[in-house]
Image 1 (cartoon, helix red, strand yellow):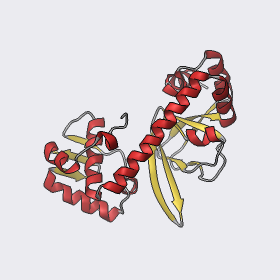
Image 2 (spheres, helix red, strand yellow):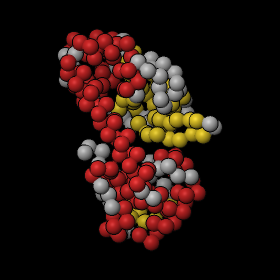
Image 3 (tube, one colour):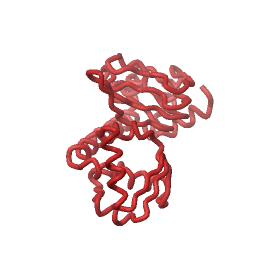
Length: 232
């Protein structure tokens, strides 16, 4: 494992407070692997053998049932997945595949659980991250259940505009097919929602987004700290 990989992992809130000896023990069992695009890294239902950390590239989390598939999240550097299955020693509830060429650190779940048992700071950080993930699931459920498809798209664009520096123009970092799945829509519903937002000053051409009247868009979206703020 490269020194830069270890440094990046150490810098994550999950690992930052660990005792150095415990961190080094955990890292000794880990290894780094680079994957090409569209490689399935884990499959839902399989045992959670490793905690994965994305250090380069991006990974899509998705789930399937009855010949249907839905996108759950996109993981970008430097982030872990899927912590809950690792700590609980339970099967993965989601699958994961690379979107682009990606570099990952893999830590054996047995070693992660052993560190949880002996390192109080790490255990507290695990609880904090799992609580954050739980709250994200609640917010996503509220978003899907309380908002129309147009409102969901409007709030997504407002969040993306903020993440991209707040300018009037930015690029979507996700294919429209994946975006529709993430927002709980069919591609056809997404197309209709995109057309409907034109009257609110939103133009989407390919992956390029322009928001000419952010106040008008916000009046439709009605963003909420209790749904849209990832840190609240």
